Image (tube, rainbow, N blue to C red; front, top):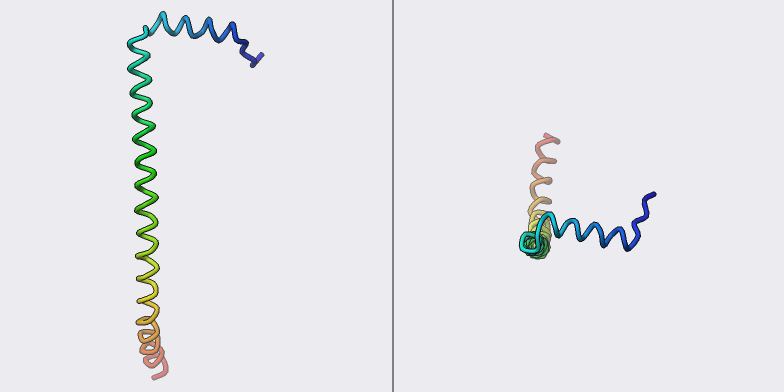
Length: 81
C-alpha cells in the first residue's frame, strides 16, 4: 500500500507540473536551493565561531585556575578564622 511505482510517480509529477507550471516550480526550486545553501553557510560559520569560543574559554579557564587558587586560599583563611 505504501509502495509507489514508477508510473504513479510520473503521473504525480505531470499533475504537479500542470497545477504549478514550470516557472513556479523553477522559482520554488531556486528558493529552496538558496535556503539550503544559506543554512549550510550559517552552520559552517557557527562551527568556526564555536571552535574559537572553545579556545577562548579554555584560555580563560586556565587563567582563572591560576588566580582561582589564590581566591580559594583567601576564602579558606576567612573560614578558619
